[in-house]
Image (tube, rainbow, N blue to C red; front, side, top):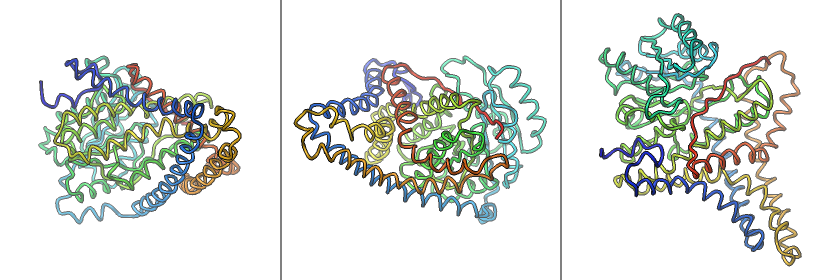
Length: 512
């Protein structure tokens, strides 16, 4: 068996050895058991040991208050750096490097039933970038299962963009290939392999000089993105062992989306902006960039996982013995807000999208097993990244439930003796005060979200902007239904071995 066999594992059944398969299965169960156990203990202790539960919720509320303050400072700092980076002439700075012209950009856009205009806008944004087009190779990865409509879309786009770059390549990923699940990862890997064979190798371009950028089909890049990326690629200490992460701004169809969806989209943007300030904890998400050399070394992205964008980081991290990192770019990319023709369909799609993102919890058994198989990774790196991911998914599934239930659970479920204590009387008030203070941390998100909004269409009423700001203060309650429950759903599916497939978020840009 190849010593790196564990790099391509997607689930326990992939392992042939019974002991390894059982161990991996235990790792798959841990996140769900941990989250469900937390909720069970919260209820049980509120019932049997209300005093203990009360002190826990007070401590947890204080922790959440301090965490909110801490993250608010990071959000402000990350936003400030992003605005500063947008003002820089990156192409001019890039020319300070004598060998910058050796770099080529390989841009891959995996697509699945996206409308022609959405794909066209994505490709136009790449074509309008300021980086020399003779150094850019663009691949549009279509799915054969999309049928004749996809072929017609591809023909129209090929006719429009075939002369816009050094090469414009369209690939068609076959369906039902062995060892694959339909999704972005399998499509993208196929497209990249085709581009490397048909363009890179035939043009005698070295893998070390090719930066691969993975773009979601609805991504609109800013004009200086590839110049900024190239500058950072040449500036970092070890670019071949580094991924580069921009800030995702969900703005393309912001005025067509329900305000509730707008809020959740901004919350995702803010979380990734905050993480730009914590590069030691950063993991690739959605659209990102990395060297073709690293991708080739790990055999390209896994074709049988849902969260391929984060899994490629862990593949490289394990392959290079922990000597792999993510570099924050502090530079934005714009994508679509989750929207559908009806309000209820939008809510349904939001839940499914959040559940798909939360299924990144499958990375936990992957890296735990990989940590055991690779003793060369420093223990401190294992602990730092491992704790961050485990705590993040646990918090994702439980924090909002704990915050909005434990304040009253000990009072409601506790014994009669507890209900007559001073602690019972003050607990709801204390937690309410702390949560109210914590909600002041929403002031910065409100201000930043309003500043990021694109120009308002003439038909868009001004009063909706005020409603938009007010809705931010309903966000903490909504987190239970659109963050905690989807995360629990994903963790329980993994725990029970009911593995998820890839769900592609439908794209909708209606009239304002």
